[in-house]
Amino acid sequence: MLGVGNGSGGVVLMELNKIYNEPCLKTMARMDDKSINSIITSPPYWQLRDYGHPDQWGLEPTFNEYLEHLWQFMDEAYRVLKSDGTTWVNLGDTYARGSRGKGGTEHTASGRQNNKAEPISKPIYNNLDKCLLLIPHRFAIGCIDRGWIVRNDIIWAKPNGMPESVTDRFTKKHEYIFFMVKQKKYYFDLDASREPISQISKDRYLRGNSELNKYAAGEGLPAMTQADTMSQPRSNISNQSQITKDLFNNSPTDKRIIKSHSDYGNHLGLSDKSTIGPEHPNGKNPGDVADFWAITTKPNSDKHYASYNDELLKKPVLSGCPKDGIIYDPFIGTGSTGEVALRAGRNFIGSETTPEYCDIADKNTSIILNQTKLF
Image (tube, rainbow, N blue to C red):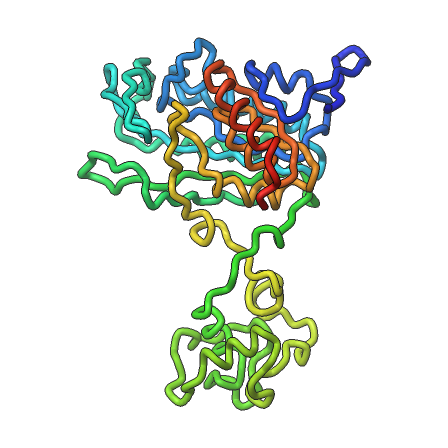
């Protein structure tokens, strides 16, 4: 149970690991200040889907009205989020498409068709026909104006993204995930999200930071100092990969060639040495574009047209919320955020306005509640 204020000095207990069939603002109104560790969500995109709910967001006549709704949610999110909490918002963009009637059939991953997936509303584009509206960027700037600190604008690259029947621009195959916080110091576990360092990166690292580099003059380079010739292999080195493996395994083959980083004290060179190289045994900082954000869309048979891939959620959950913390998803859909939170040993609260999706989410999360944690 989560103790939340009732607005009159009393306390109402809000059940954890539960989806509430109501708008997110109604759910958050019952939450106490600074009661949530992390907010992870993907709001309905503007003019992309009609979910059949009379009060749904995403079908506002103008994108400015849509953004005002999102900022209203973010203002409440700021109140309920703990001071050291994190917020992750996945948001896609929209092209102004002029006048349109009812769209064609929408095919789900299971092959079912739905003629109501395309909105039949008539949005107002204000003479921006064919223009990419940059809604995610407008949203993020508005959040900054409201006091949020944007730490990353993560690119979610979708290798299997839907094709588009356009011939005068490139197909759009990415979305944004904005990582935002309330203050300069906040909870963030980078070690939970580190990625293995590839052998190629290790080889290049060694060439740039040892006597093997032609600019080293027999002394090697200070730790983490990058040379201009990192991409140029030395022709007289036949066992480069083995030497690199030994270095990263802390067992140098030739200590005359491979100098210990401790020889250089706390010199950082050009980078924070916690992010790359052999300094951290758990691997590298995964970055904000391709290394772990190149994630395919997830086939889905739950009648929801915008469900998360679990892989997209793992690192925000693991890095942005402590064990036994509380994650809130105000647009939880079929419950993917709740599923990943439970598997990772976190609690969740969800809001969803569509009763059918609530039933699916309850079913999906109930199964996980009775299973052993998977990671």
